[in-house]
Length: 100
Image (cartoon, rainbow, N blue to C red; front, side, top):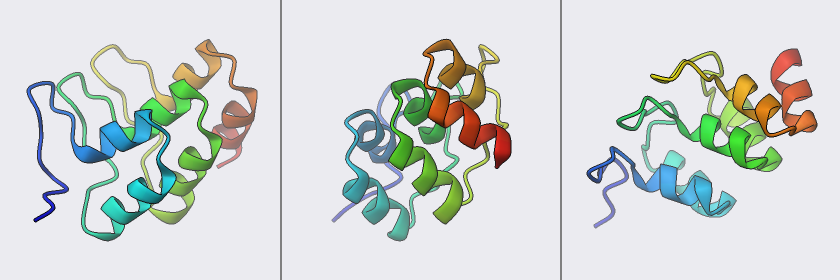
């Protein structure tokens, strides 16, 4: 069956992969099935960080508003979701994270 908590050698779970591929429905299914929204990979990066860096507004909203993702978590390099969105000039995500 589905193991939503499975990790590969880099610490990525199915949620990390679904996030970088911008598969909202898969992310939602994984989270509803018990995946942890704040699980970190080996570098300390979470799904909301990946979505913020990639500019996936709908996923950032999903993780934060529906599944209470922690936006202030810091990975090993110190770049939070807000900082990653700012670096990539994803202003809609920056504005959302500042006001949330």
